[in-house]
Length: 348
Image 1 (cartoon, rainbow, N blue to C red):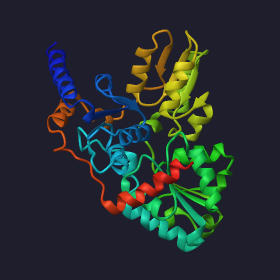
Image 2 (cartoon, rainbow, N blue to C red; image 1 turned 45 degrees about the vertical axis):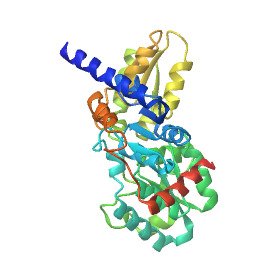
Image 3 (cartoon, rainbow, N blue to C red; image 1 turned 135 degrees about the horizontal axis):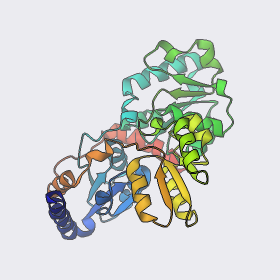
Image 4 (spheres, one colour; image 1 turned 90 degrees about the horizontal axis):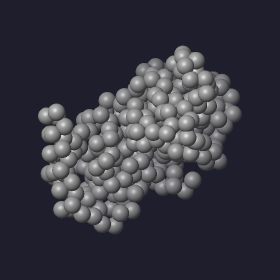
């Protein structure tokens, strides 16, 4: 009971600060945030859409990003000079983004281009990566992509050069390649812990797509066994999953798409439908509340602990120190190069 009272006090304080700052403040909440955070946000959505929205806001001096660190970084890359980006918890990272260490990415890039030639590979980086990797892509005429436009990004990249190096999510890269009918033997995984990523020179010469060995811990928890069990329980259900899941899970699903796609899918499905979703649990719980006329079930409970680090207490602390603490900044040179990669994506 006490907890509910405390939460109410904190929420009231947050609302008071929001009213005081008016349109100088914008709070962005990612789809995976818990409900009480979403309810206090000005915009909810996926990472890039939110960053764009904030950067286009001519009044917002303060952007508070309730999400993980790379998302706040993307907002900082796009932000105008008068805008400050903050995050309620600086330790809200992303394990997948951390799997692509900047030093190892540079080394892998040099290894590949030394074998196949400098001008034959286009780097593509998933939005879920740190600013340094985005800048690397910008410097090497590559682009950033989101889970909703990866296929377009692949098609664009192949028009530039004949090979793609995709960072940092092996599964999103492979699922996109499968979608575009790229033969499995032409897609090779690059394991940064092994010499030449665990490949031979002839493998590298033959490959058209290099997939960095990285993954999302939330989305790789789902298995085809989970799907089989759910189909037995709910034979009329549709199973929809995120493209960060393994190719086996994606192939066994009824539909696959980004967080925004999943939200739209649930919205458009008819009353009484049973939808089983393979993504972060907070989004599924909220969809179940928002659509009581439909049965919305998680494929398995899978929580992102980093997203969960954002709470009412640290959001309030952030707002009480607006423009002062937990500021997310990006080095000028990195910002300039990363911006090129983001611009290339926008031109898609």
